[in-house]
Length: 142
Image 1: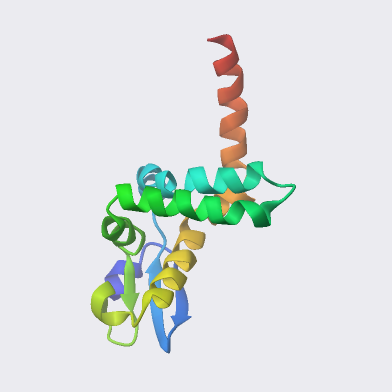
Image 2: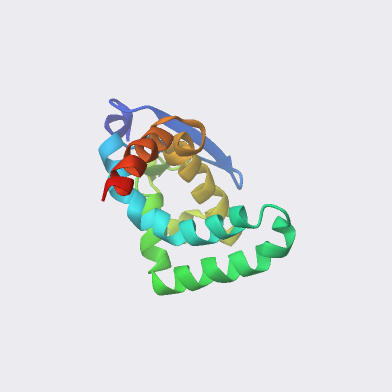
């Protein structure tokens, strides 16, 4: 496990009485996985943002969109991608989703934590916004 985390920063997450270590993805790996992961979440999230005046009433529809998207995709493949570089510090072994996590809540909690680790910069950073600022004028020229 030590070699896995020598070159990249990692974060620890305490969930369900266990501690998990997640290696940060390289920028290229995060970009390569973004379409697969974003595809599942983009439509429901954009639906919620488009109903900013009453987001509470949009939650059921957004959840239906999310579940529909997860049904079309292989949800196990999606979680395998998200949790691909996670180790269980308790056992010093690569995470085995089926055996190391106790329930769906732990899976979702760990998945959300790792997604924040890898993609939190999209929400707080300038890079994505700058990319759209470049793309918008190109789109208007076409």
